[in-house]
Amino acid sequence: MNNSRQALLQQIKDGQFHSGEQLSAELSVSRTAVRKIIKQLQQLGLDIESRHGMGYRLQRPVELLDSDKIFAHLQKRARPLCNGIDVLFETDSTNQYLAARCAHESCSGHVVLAEHQSQGRGRRGNQWLSPLAGGISLSVAWRTDYTYASLGLLSLFVGVAVARALSKIGIHEVGLKWPNDILVHHQKIGGILIEMQGEANGPIAMVIGIGINHAIPTKIAQAIDQPVTDIVSHVQNTVSRNELAAILISELLLLLNGTTEDDHEALLEEWRRYDCYKDRMANLLLHDSEISGQVMGIDDDGCLLISVDGHVERYMSGELSVRLQS
Ligand code: BTN
Image (cartoon, rainbow, N blue to C red):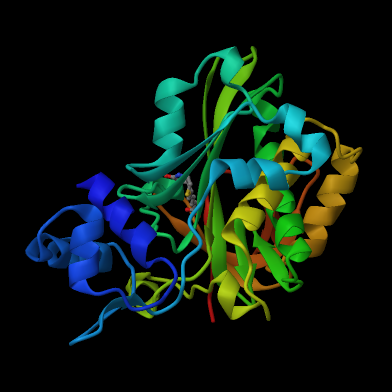
């Protein structure tokens, strides 16, 4: 079934009408089966119009992900750091896929992308919705000598890599919300989930997952419990999904490898320039409580500083989330 969904999408990806008869011949299935597959594609988030006498067409053409195209668009310096690119049509979660296969050293730099995730994972146990071909869902396996203590910083720096990638495609109003939500005009356009395995003081194997909304159907945007936006709402011309994936992967690999020449201080300064919550009143959700105060930015360890009743408190990365009061 997975294969027939993929095959049908290949046929209709151009955004033109395709008759049921033609599709059933191309896929060697009955017209009833074509109708069924179309319904499944619609349920997975594709906007497909069905018109009597004309057939089916996508409301907007879709560029499917292709590993060769992505590799060809990687920055030259990033290519040696990339240890293979898998493009999956559907998976539960690209983070889960890599974590299950790639704990060993030789996997570092392996990249996986999926057109659709059935159980996309977000931070704090939240679900990440990945409508079919509507975003970029990618994960990168990486081994590092970073210690757990500095991983909070690393997660902030991944946000900087994503912000740089979005600026490169013409989105200049990118903001970062501690620890690593990516926003445009206070609406979420992407998120980062870093999962790791390793010893307390040894090298760490991690999976860095990045989800970016490319073209999110209105129905799905409405089902998300916070304001969201997507790439197509902020750029004039069509942005190739393969090119966007390549830019994200290049920026990430170069940053992880330390190729970008930026030292921690420079990266922290850059993060602070993207910080879109600094000085705002906010609620900070802890595991079992919530505090309110004024966000004072981050310290040099990447911890959030928040002023509560005149006292500046410091919170570690990764355990908290922030919400605007108004
Ligand atoms: C968040 O903002 O809560 C983090 C979202 C991270 C989503 C990405 S999509 C690719 C990778 N695979 C997952 O299951 N999650 C991450």
